[in-house]
Amino acid sequence: MHIIESNGIKIVLSEFKDSVSEFGDVYLRTDINEPPARSLKMEQAVRTITQIREMQDPKANILCTSHASDVKKSLSDNFEILRMEIEKEIDPIAPELNGCAFVNSLDELSRANKEYEGHLIFLDNVRKTVAEETKPPENSSGSALWSYFSPFDKVNNALSCCHRDHLSLRIFTDGCYCSDTFVNELQTVTELYSSSDDNDVKIWGVAGAKLDKLDSIYLTEGRNDLMVALDGGPILVLLVWALAREARSLSRILPDQIGPENRELIERFFGGPKWEMIKGKALKIAKMIEEGQIDIILPIDVIVDSEGEEKTVSLSAINKGRFLSLGPNSLTMLGEISARRQFMQTGSVEPKEYLDRGEESTTYNLTREVLRHARKLYINGGDTVSDIRTFESQLKLYKAREKKMFYELASGGFVVKWWGFLNTRKNIPAGVRYASIGSFKTLYRKLDSGKGFN
Image 1 (cartoon, rainbow, N blue to C red):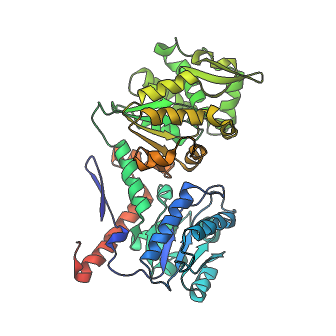
Image 2: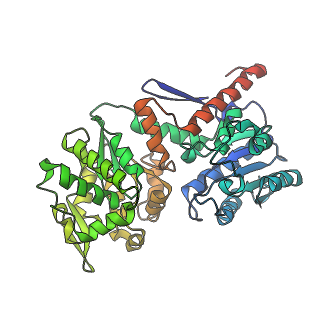
Image 3: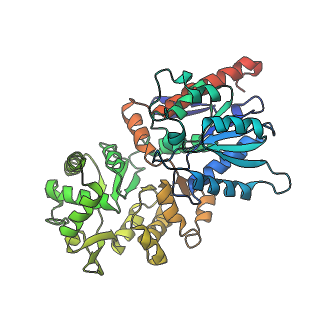
């Protein structure tokens, strides 16, 4: 068993090594909800599938599913990528899997499970194929999905979904194992938030446009060991606007106003019915920064598009054009500040099309600077990982992985809910709670087998 422990909180999870017998048919919940392409989430799914096959009756099947953000969208293209990635990994002479099949309903899944042996059978987008997925019934154990999977071994490989209370995750209370990927990543993100010596400062690089970035900044309140580096995306522009209104002590380095093009940028990403809520959060964070409750690192210089021409200007001159990315002095500064510290980047630091600039891109140069100086660099979120992997060869990321200096995480927005739980000890993310309950059931079965916990 594995115990996740932080500041008095203990979460027990059952691992693959806790199994005392060969797996039969396995229900596997994974997450490949991304644009169909090779990715970290695909790698994690393939790794878990191959591990299951090492422990499984060769004739048994893996019954797998994932969700898509759009309830109407099919994951058929994602499945094809998964199938091709699996085929690269399996033994060509004695394949661990006899084949892969794609099904569109629970009835088709049931029929395929009877027809095939030693297969991966993938149920299309669970939000599309199971009407109760996002609104589980009170008596969830009586649902068709739960009833069908109840007799099988169950594996949770969907940590990135575990902030949701969905039926495909509730099933794990009936007994489950957590994949190595699930356990290792939850341990890592726990350590990244757990209190540490004030001299061991961790830096969170925050970029992109997702609203959970604002919530993650809140979670650094009063923490002398956590600093936020605003290093790109519309979220930076939003907070520069808020700081210009609330942080008088920073007026020397901030613009009087952000300019019409940056106002349009904020409107494009944050406008709409949620604007008042978003504005309120941004202004509150700015006030907390002004009052010293949150430690922030602001850029020295930025690159803006001024009438079609790119210019590097000071942060106070961000209103001279539309913000694009950090300037070179800011990248050097972030590298030096991260020296011998842990740095976690979440969110893309520049528009994706700018990755084509190769070694002139901000993504390349920020990663290079931080890898040169930091003790460890963590990249969180599928899109962010994919951005940085564009420069796999140039940055020699494989060497950084080998030296345990560079870590890639697929948890994404889940980490904000998890850190909120660690901060308040309230509202444990539903999927983790279900996995923990099911882990106890699995462990009790091991104890009942007479073989004990050793």
